[in-house]
Length: 159
Image: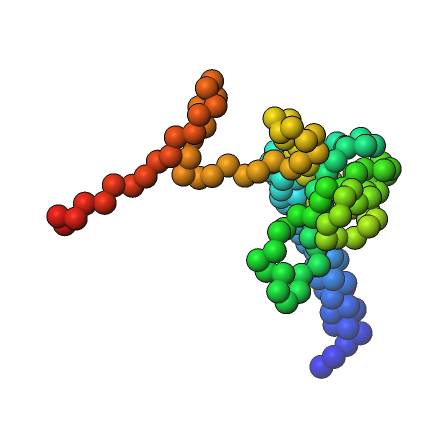
C-alpha cells in the first residue's frame, strides 16, 4: 500500500540523490579543470622552450621570399624567389617587399618573416651585385691561398 508518507520519503530520497549527484559532478568538473590546466601549462612550457624568435629585417634589406603557390611543373623549381628589397616594416613580423632585378616572381608582395631569408651577395667578385655561387661538393678551397683542390675517388680494377 502506498501512503503519503512513502511518497514523501521517496521524494526526499530522490532530492538527496540529485543533490549528491550534483556535488559529485561539480567536484569532477573542478578536478578535470585543474588537470587540463596542468597539461596546458606543460604543453606551453615545452612549446616555448623550442621556439625561436623570427629574424628582424629593416627597410632596404635584400631578402629571398618563399614560393608559396605550388602547381604542376614547380616541384623541381627553386623554393625561394629573389632578390627582393624590404620597403615597409609592418606589425606582427610582416613586411612589404619589391622585386629587385629581372627574375621570375611577383613585382610587389607582402610576406612574413617566416617565409623570408636574407639574400647573400658575393663581395669577392669584380661586379658588386652578383649572387653567390654555390660551392662545389667535390672541391675544397684553401682559405689562405685560394687554391682549389679536387677530391677524386680511386677505383680499383682488381675487385
